[in-house]
Image 1 (cartoon, one colour):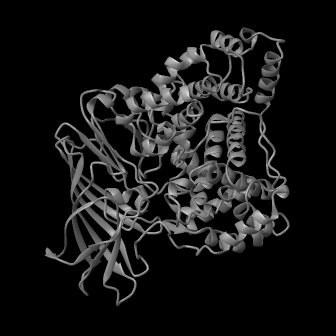
Image 2 (image 1 turned 180 degrees about the vertical axis):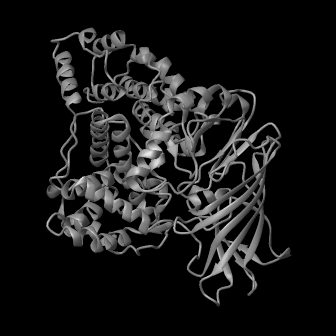
Length: 634
């Protein structure tokens, strides 16, 4: 996520830089800065979750039973969470949970009240709920209600949905927002099974990241079971006017009726992706893999909630050009959902592995040429972040102490992590690396692991088996040093070489825009062409491009984003009506945040951004508001 705030928790593919790639010379960086990085990193206690108050080392929550009612009038979930616990220390009698702005009504064991206290509120972490458990207690029930402003819950009015007739609710728990709608141990190292009863208005359907029955009666009471243990950030709920359409034996899509057919057609290759991934990386462990298409306010591209990935409608392009997002969320079923980062410092174990698998899935389904183009775009995203971020944020095993864990979401854990794995693949051979991944996913199945545990596993596997091909010091440099090691792989694409030639010819006045041979271009080629134009262009150049290719009116959200960003950078006013419409109709942070940031650089642009933000804010997710309000506030 990647957030984020990117996407992403979804993968930040297809968002390349708009300037030529700059070389990153790690060796030339200040040695004192490097010493400081090393010093800070060495002080981190591996496996300690600095973003949770919980005490799973003393008492661990193993299962959650939810019984919640969705009240759209008050914008609250009300009901109970019954937590089954296991004592890790016999003498332990205080269970500590994470909460954020929950209204606790009572806490009981076997129906009898027990003592509890609420800790002070931390702006990023919320409040600790400490419960005194009787010696023989194995379960405790918390009766509570969420806040209407819960950071992990968005309530949409009918006007903010596609159908305009019914309200909509969805949750987004990553990174630490599950605590805003469930009192629990909100750390990825704590894995739970769960059951849930969700009560809704009769005309709405509830779905969860659990076993969903597409044929369930729409009666206002829905029951769910998640039999595999999952970390808290993968607990997810959505309620709305939803219908289901199958795409294969194990795959289907939920969406509002007006979007259902388009979504099913766009993502019809999902079953093929699932089968190809199983053939290469081992059995799929989650029974079904369905998609939920959310309203456009969803702040990320996708969220890998098990059994039911949450997906933005902004990737429904009509030509399958943006389905790498689906491959990414599916890949999380192996890397992230089955083998999970133990803390947010270790996010690269989720996202780096998943991004690597995404490229492989796209190659298996759509061919080598598309794989190469997407890899180049991802590499340019990475270079842009390396150029922009401080050294400490360019490290895979990032130091997040004292910071909001949402800060970890950039291209570093995604693209740098994937590039690291691609280097290993190239050094030992693809077949050998695939065999390692199958073993790795099986060895750590349904566990949450740290970077240190991964390195120890490498020591006993690849580093021992391939001592001539792999170097441990280089592995540590990839993980603990900023930037890229010298000689890191650089993706290339023959298709992009041709585009470079045509772009240069146009910039030099040797070719008119209408004479550029774009008729067979894919979305990836368009993005490469646009994102590698100079930042500064004249009105005449922009008008020529717009006239030739109708870029202002592009219906592809990624192409529109790149063009509108260029319009803002050059104050190309003919695109500003479209820019305004874009900002008020989409809440995906990857697409709107760069536009708000760029607009904020001039007084006139900031005023424009403030007006759009004010209109869009009621429909934006809380995370989108948090990520962008600083660009529009005086």
